[in-house]
Length: 173
Image 1 (spheres, helix red, strand yellow):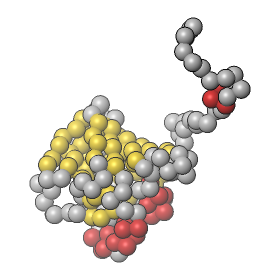
Image 2 (image 1 turned 90 degrees about the horizontal axis):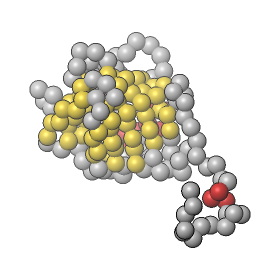
Image 3 (image 1 turned 180 degrees about the vertical axis):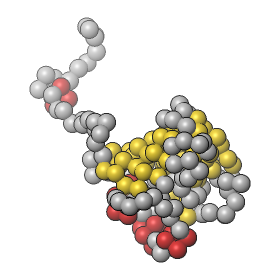
């Protein structure tokens, strides 16, 4: 390629600095929250806080409690299955190949609406909420839904991770 553009000098590090990284398919830290299993693939520590990325497998009929992030945007890419999402006071159904963006300050939640485990990619911009999964996600035992008592005991912890639960009890009806 012969570009007739002003280019950086050959001694500029832009030509040689290999600052990127790769995360292989089997890489990541596995954590379970109820019937959701997430592999935390990229953390804020790796991206100077720019973003985080998780790969989740969600059991049928399960998902997270509607909540809001006060500091982070969240985005979802459905790899397989069908999910129902809450976006404010609206429900959205998303299937494989669909992408959903939720800006900070927006009530949201999801659940697997199918009859088989389904895969969902989750992105946080900037990073931060992934640290909740790393610190408080479970690593062993049989999957059990997180109870109201468990969530009530985590109010301060969730707040420290810029999350506030906003359930109404009938969102998935």
